[in-house]
Amino acid sequence: MRAFPSIEDLRQRARRNVPKLFFDYVEAGSYTQQTLRANCADMAGIPLRQRVLVDVDQRSTATTILGETASAPLALGPIGLGGMLYGDGEILACRAAQAAGIPYTLSTMSINSIEDVAGAVDKPFWFQLYVMRDRGFMRELVQRAQAAKCSALMLTVDLQVLGQRHCDVRNGLTVPPQINVRNVIDVITKPAWAWSILKGKRKTFGNLAGHVKGMEGVGSLAQWTASQFDPSLSWKDIEWIKSLWPGKLILKGVLDVQDARIAVKTGVIAISVSNHGGRQLDGAPSAISALPRVVDAVGADLEVLFDSGVRSGADIMRALALGARSCIVGRAYLYGLGADGQAGVARAIEILQKELDVIMALCGVKRVAEINRQVLAGYDEPSNSLPL
Ligand SMILES: Cc1cc2nc3c(=O)[nH]c(=O)nc-3n(C[C@H](O)[C@H](O)[C@H](O)COP(=O)(O)O)c2cc1C
Image 1 (spheres, rainbow, N blue to C red):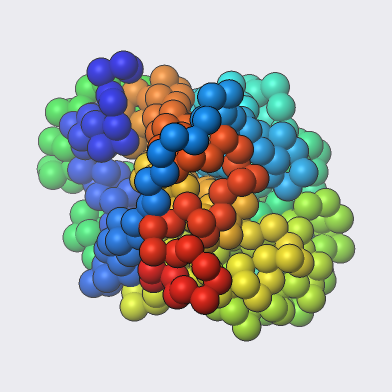
Image 2: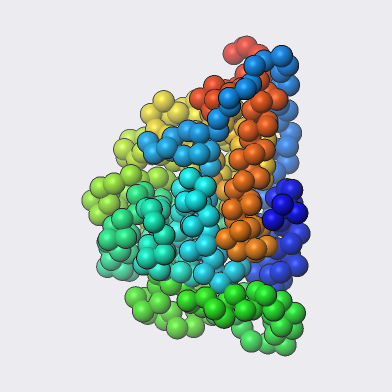
């Protein structure tokens, strides 16, 4: 794994290992992908402030996330179909996160079920909820997360309907994968991947199979989502979810200041400023450009997490500088998973953490709590505008 010095190196290996169908699914944004591109381009456009002759011995990336200690301001985000990048992918990613001392989030749309993961790891993990029309099933799903001792519930609020990813349509992304000539060639040229999937516990959505009707052959993910997900979900339902889940509740996918203010009134512990990695509203602003306004509006009232576009330790530094308390990553760790299963995820986490540690040193900062807008070049005094 030392041979992978960067997230990009892991990405290149994942591209070679994983069938195109699933690699494309990870990479893609919705429609023209303008928001996907903006997430990374705007991030790269934020210059960091080089400081010299500051004693940066004895640094630490340690922090707290939702009141729990973490080795870095970093969590692994929820990923639907994560177990299609590597057999038992969710179990392996959770193990890597827990070994590194950071939170892991299991998606409603995972391949391993809540029970599979809970039975295979030592510590609690977070569970991400998509709200479906069948409220009886929703209640049961939340109860399963409670029985598995999940330590936080992350309600994703930016996917009541699915933004189209053109490549998934072209590639015929179905669950389980369609057997056609193109897909068969794709799969038989990826033997290590095929072997890991064959050995894995499951080949379809673990949380839904046996619980939701019509799960036997989901067919097109887009069609299935359209028929099952509840587009009537509204702020009123947060009370209902809180009545089912009295524990820590995070709203993921808030980009707008007005929505952030409403979120404060609901009493959730945290929000994640996110545009779903550019996979939902194409044309929405980059998440990093939305972050400072949301932090200014609600940062004192709840914990502001951030995701969408984090690919390096420098990106974590930028998001923290603009007020995020910690970052959630998606693709950055999926590249590690596709590259080499648990070892690859562990390597991705290590890369991000070590990069953050060096960037902190070069910006003259020793503690995560010291990171603020002063670490950005071009931002010295409050009167100066942000470089965004
Ligand atoms: C392949 C893939 C699947 C995803 N599945 C889910 C999901 O099931 N639930 C969810 O809330 N977010 C999901 N997301 C969004 C991520 O949790 C996260 O918001 C996003 O990846 C952050 O952007 P980044 O990939 O640029 O780090 C998914 C993202 C990707 C790339």
